[in-house]
Image (cartoon, rainbow, N blue to C red):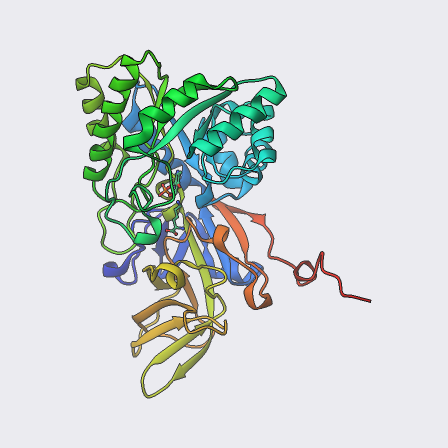
Length: 431
Ligand SMILES: Cc1ncc(COP(=O)(O)O)c(C=O)c1O
Ligand SMILES: N[C@@H](CCCC[NH3+])C(=O)O
């Protein structure tokens, strides 16, 4: 198929499976206007081929090394997405009992699940122990003690890593940095050895690994390597205490291209990590990774239709039918997402703020974008596959959008739009 880019300067950013064919945006071989006609908007569209291409980038970088990729499923927890990664052999990084339930429902192997999160509840520990997860990434001493008690009561021992907070600056948005000592995550690196001693002494847990995750949307290898050096020192100290470690988990966080960022390719990071491990003089350990965004972010877009064009003295607004409740990242982090006309038109282009119908001034998807628009036009919000639908809410009593997976020339609705009835389900009024 020949792809004709309406505006070669503005192809979908880093999204090879979304492309213009004869001036119309396609997902793989599916023309998006026809899809919207059938399913309505707003609509999340994922490319199956893109998911697999992203996973393959990890596999190719891993080669023959012993690395388990545990998909950080908080980025996109749709069952169809999980199933693709489960079939490809991925494990999962979960942060709740609900995520565990989804992994099982998607056919994932609990034996390849690592359980992260600072606030694990007793029922979640019990469910994970019963399912037989690979490891609990424990984030505090109180959690460690609780886990030991819960496991002892069930007559099992819980496999644990301690999530170490290495106090490195991941140079990312402050809301998505997790490896600084002022962040709530993990156990401070300078107290980690003592925490491992405690772990080794507790009856209900058994130490299997060391874990770390420093943040998200990281585009440089340096913070990872700074953290790794600290973890390797810890491994040496643990070896001196005869505490043996089977795996080292370096977390996720690899950044993607939203605008003009250079993404952090798995190979660029892993080649350097392997070199450090090989030079460390330590016995070989399995490496675990927890990538989320880099597996799904550029495998998805959000389609929306222009309801109104509103021109004021100060601004031109394209008021669209998607809003901050559907894609929260711009409102929450002032995140930049590309916006493309699905069928770009010639004519006068104006600078538009693309905004939704929600009653908040933070309800914008993009600002000051040069677009030639008419009412009824379709827009694609790029790089919406990660932290898109999963963070959607029904604020303003808006049904959450449907999700569709495109596979070549076929597509499948992998989650239907919320019904209006579902918006009042479970509520009752006083007599
Ligand atoms: C513990 C943990 N692992 C993995 C991830 C996935 O991160 P990312 O989507 O940036 O790869 C996150 C989110 O930042 C996380 O908190
Ligand atoms: N929700 C964030 C990422 C959070 C990472 C989870 N620890 C985002 O959209 O960028």
